[in-house]
Amino acid sequence: MGVFTELADGPQEFDKLAGRLGLHERSARDFLDALVALGFLKRNGDTYSNTDETDLFLDKKKPSYLGGMLEMANARLYRFWGSLTEALRTGRLQNEAKTGEAHFFQALYADPARLRAFLKAMSGLSHGANIAIAKQFPWAKYKTFADVGTAQGDLATQIALANPHLTGIGFDLAECGPCFEEYVEANGVNDRVRFQPGSFFTDALPKVDVITMGHILHDWDLEEKKMLVKKAFDALPTGGALVVYDAIIDNDRSKNAFGLMMSLNMLIETEGGFDYTGADCIGWMEEAGFKECYVEHLVGPDSMVVGLK
Amino acid sequence: MGVFTELADGPQEFDKLAGRLGLHERSARDFLDALVALGFLKRNGDTYSNTDETDLFLDKKKPSYLGGMLEMANARLYRFWGSLTEALRTGRLQNEAKTGEAHFFQALYADPARLRAFLKAMSGLSHGANIAIAKQFPWAKYKTFADVGTAQGDLATQIALANPHLTGIGFDLAECGPCFEEYVEANGVNDRVRFQPGSFFTDALPKVDVITMGHILHDWDLEEKKMLVKKAFDALPTGGALVVYDAIIDNDRSKNAFGLMMSLNMLIETEGGFDYTGADCIGWMEEAGFKECYVEHLVGPDSMVVGLK
Image (cartoon, rainbow over all chains, first blue to last red; front, side):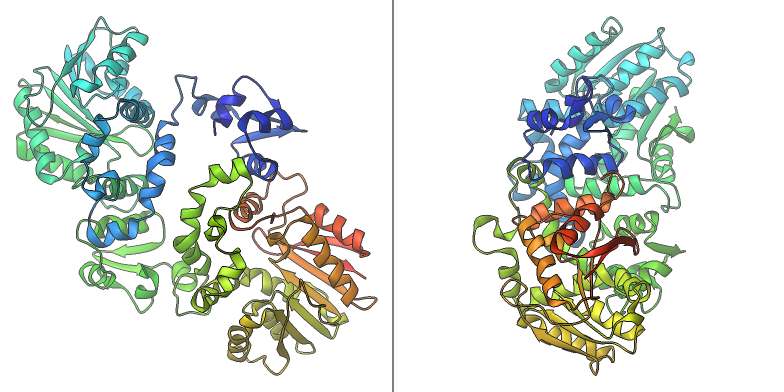
């Protein structure tokens, strides 16, 4: 509905706000007051305003906006989760691809507007973890990196911003190029971060010191996951590192509810994807030849798994 | 899926449980472990069990089961809430009646299985508040009562169980009779509580000392609400009482999120229904002639509003 973007310019009285949002008189007060009671808005007399949090994170015009995933949930996922029972019983995805028309990513890449919305959603979901990786990983030891499956390029951007000695590559399908280049330029790192088109299924990965994969492995089935980890191993020099991050599930699979729910989201969205524990990922890394593997928490539900070649 | 009913007979190992629930191997672990992480199940080794709470409240075979509303949300409301935006913009309901086929309650009463499920759902939603009213209201002053819009009869049953000196009537459309009579008999109060068929739109209300209306007023528009309050006033003797309860919204409309969301649910489900504050209800009561009106909290989001004639 754009409530928080509308209120980002300042508080508004009820009549004006309801009018600008196009709310019917039957529903306007209940909707806005429910948002007050749920802690998303404040109300003083008859005037509504954003909270600090909704102003920062849910105003579409701010770079800190992270509602892209919520927009996607609104436009797509809510409906698909409505057939969760069928997914649980059949193990089959429930999104646009259910009718056999197109694979999720094929359908996505065929529609530029939807692709752009998806890439932004992924940035919103990843931004906090990206900033954490840019600070927490020992980047001082390395000179080059490639973010594989880079989407809009927020991880590559945050790494470059926090580490001026690094040069990096954003690697993804060619269709992501325009969105990526616009983003790195807007963030002033286009002199050190460039886009390299390619498919991590059919092409070799860039030869750099560190390869990152953020919210990538969970999209794919077990064999595809292992293939991607092995491909990273093959591309890295001795001493190089692979940094994988996702909503890594705790090894006991009893605490990270977000990670487990995200895995069910992969059930809804993909043919074979699933989220995984740190122990699972370290197993695949060691099988590929990595050593000194470890898990480190980033922010919220996300952790990174690091392996050295 | 019946997870909690299945586990009510005792803990089960993963393979057996997944098999009995018909869970596909791709989704079984993630689904059950997500329920562990969310606090709905416990897991010990490879064996899953209910928590104390899910065993008491979500086992369909127990009288304390309150999942009826969740079943209704699963079968109907989830889908209808998917068009909340349209409801907010148009003020129009979004359920089965949207296509003009049938009014919500007409469609409901036309389908015995759906009616029974709805009546059970209402009992589940109301049970805690019903027990509270049976204890908190000064029943010692009165001899007879009628629960108007009684559905399965849980409020009438709880009042009779807690107050052996009272005799009461459950008043609702004739179709509710079988379900009501089965319920009061199962609870052993059929000697003091009887069913009286009738419509609160076309018939006078029973002449008793106290009239209760639980989760009734919120279904209807402002004129209908006032008409029902007036009809109760007309049926009561001097000194009699009307007890209305709903998820009464706090007068500032900033705290009872459940009540405000329930009002949006009335937007989705009815032509003109809405939830309301204690001050709203006292206004309608005073307009009808009631005096000494007050609001008293019951349990959770529910409060009762009492008026004396």
